[in-house]
View 1 (cartoon, helix red, strand yellow):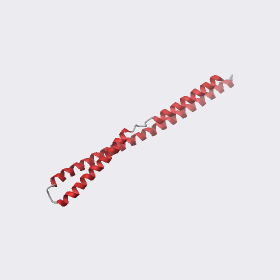
View 2 (cartoon, one colour):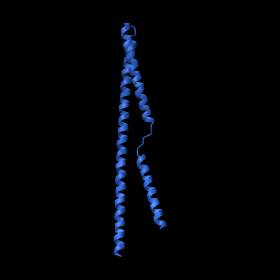
View 3 (cartoon, helix red, strand yellow):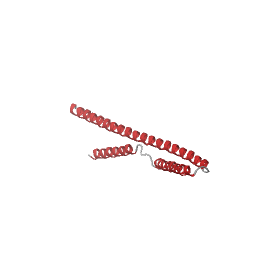
Amino acid sequence: MSESSSGLMGSLRQLISTLTTIVSTRLELLANELQEERLRLTQMLFFSLCTLFLFGIGIVLLVAFIVVLFWDEHRLAVLGFMSVLFLALGTVTALMLRNQSLTRSKLFDTSLAELVKDREQLNASQNKAESL
């Protein structure tokens, strides 16, 4: 009787140890995914601020270009070039921001996939135990 009791307790300890390891691994994976999502959102915020800044500069330069349109012709080329440059940079960052916002967040995908694997393994071992 004591042998089956110690065997049962040993199996229980093994099960608890395994479950603790699985939960620990999943929590670490979850923390990594949250960190990746935070970095993605920070990058999107940076691109948003760059876009707003560059479009703001482009608009200011475009207005200055229109005002100076009737002044000396040497200033026009520089103002026109700077306006086009900032507007082009603003367009590039806006496209980068749009592309990043359209990509689906991968938050929790890896964790969910690992949990599905765990469930399949537990079902397989349960089916194996039942067949014995």
